[in-house]
Length: 157
Ligand SMILES: CC(C)(COP(=O)(O)OP(=O)(O)OC[C@H]1O[C@@H](n2cnc3c(N)ncnc32)[C@H](O)[C@@H]1OP(=O)(O)O)[C@@H](O)C(=O)NCCC(=O)NCCS
Image (cartoon, rainbow, N blue to C red):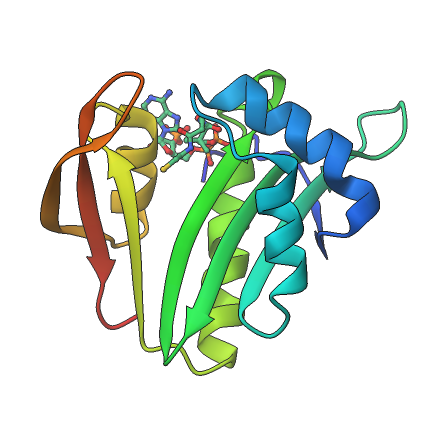
């Protein structure tokens, strides 16, 4: 994490957080998750873990990033992470990832997995920094634009 990391507070996502989360999602992806997809995460209690990071730079706390993961059968699966474009490169994603890795270990997860667009240098660099390594590739996994997914794993967590 960079020295100028933005101080953030973590919470589990609640329904009332959806407008802020959806705004960040649509600013971050060409194929954003829909409201229904986030609602499904909220309903999958005990399996899905959605963390929001809030920062307050003087105008009250606001959500600056989030991370969606599942913890199933001793495995952490990171399904989505995004930081508001106005708050990037300030260590927010790093802190979200560290917090989720910490919680997953407490919950008994032994390994972590995720998929990332091959061209997503920012996310690839972030995950490598936290010990994820390429373990596979799915050809033409993504649309808009069509692109391979890199499968990454961290074993042990
Ligand atoms: C990927 C993303 C979540 C990173 O969030 P962030 O809060 O800016 O990340 P951090 O500040 O914690 O960066 C941690 C490290 O990741 C790497 N990194 C982050 N952004 C980078 C970029 N644009 N280019 C290269 N490396 C980058 C760097 O190693 C960085 O450390 P440094 O700033 O000390 O050099 C953010 O760019 C984002 O929301 N992108 C759009 C959504 C997305 O692609 N999500 C990932 C889907 S798999």
